[in-house]
Length: 106
Image (cartoon, rainbow, N blue to C red; front, side, top):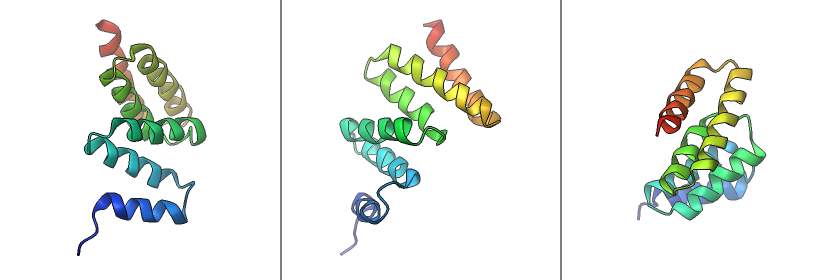
């Protein structure tokens, strides 16, 4: 019997509970499965406990937008832009700037 992705990730996180990549992978998998509450929990954990994990901000902001939490999305994008600018991650910064500008134009 083949174990699915979610089960594998949950097994991995038991051994590495503070691994930001595993948390990100779990958030993404839960989102793919339309389990937004669980996805949100992992994304928010990443933003709180692994602020330098820059991939979080785009996806967390988009999830906030989908949930109708505009102010949280704006704050998430602004925080992400600040961190990506400090880390000189120009690609992530430009992605965040684009979704931020789009949201502010609405």
